[in-house]
Length: 225
Ligand SMILES: [Zn+2]
Image: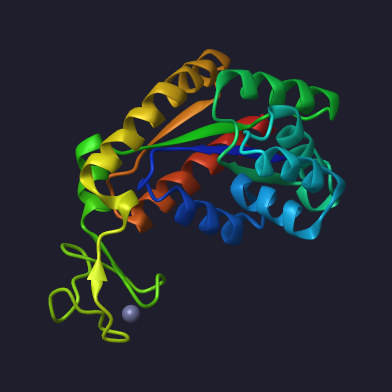
């Protein structure tokens, strides 16, 4: 079987993380959410983690080379022999080029960049409707999709439900602006390479997962021809 080396792209609230986890289960591929990789390296005090921490302690961004090196470690490990799912990297076309160069060196290539498309209005609707429990942040409700039985009160523990700063409509719109600025060049980059695949993220999570599975089955068939 050919390798499935995948990148997931999509705005905040697109359900990218959920789909990444499903892909991990369905295709038995390691799922690399780069934020998690970075935090784990810092926590475990690896050489790269210590290097990253120096930048973070100074309040600087961790440079691309350090992140790329962390990702390469994973990509060339035996667990990624059949492929991997990368989420959160690359974020810019410069990072995409660096990743391509690294993949070349490893004798690998990307199979597809999967873009989960969700309209801005839908993202605002999804995120700004979230209500988070003030006592326990993992208790999350949604005014439309998953309302608590009593308005403003957590069903699990009785805590007060609040809107996280990140979920305030004006903040969501700002994050969307950032996403568009950074990601659109990246979308064009993968489109030029002929590996961009778009998936309608407005469907239910099950439907989105089905579309992605169908897409990957087609890609694997094409590779075997
Ligand atoms: Zn609660």
